[in-house]
Image (cartoon, rainbow, N blue to C red):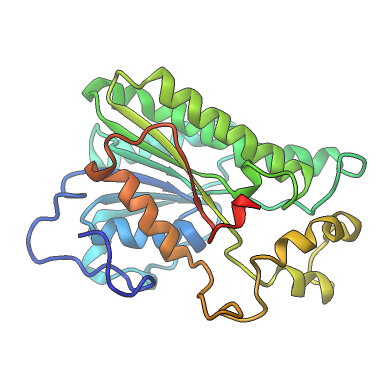
Length: 282
């Protein structure tokens, strides 16, 4: 069972063996917060052993005590040289010579800068974490998946991966690139038991506009002004939209990822799955 009646209720693990994750190892980047944390919690609930990577500290109090033994956390900046491979090596040392699932969540938003305003530092930082790191992580795990002819990779992209009207040029380019990498890996290894898919969450945090208005972030106000009307189509000012439909939560995204990681999705390969309440059709 992958779902509960309530869309934002955490899966309660069964007392018996859960075939979704029992005996399997998953790597989750960006595990300390947001979608990465929700994925970590849910995969552990499905009895995966989870290796988490993040540049920020992990709060173990956010996990069920029963799950601590199947979770290993490694703090590192994955954009540093050799950091991705080092993380994978530590995972293998912790859980043995198998990696069944890779969930590339780690990412960073840009400042909504356009092509005429982006600086080298921001471009390099966003592309490094949002695109280069996922590719390096895939490069590192694929040999182990090929060896046993089984493996699942899920890349967390964004609506910005199919639209040019929701973010700045750096974030948009990085997510478009990630979808290209997803499709390439899916096709290249389709006959070797490896599936590679992407999810495209819409806006998870509706506080972006407020943060800009209050001057809390160093956003490009002119750039944001061009995408703000598009954001307004999905970003309500409260926890639910005017029609009462709840906003998208990290756990709802995690549940979609858990489905893609399961055998129930074994025929899905190379897809880019929107999780955006139809925002992406605009």
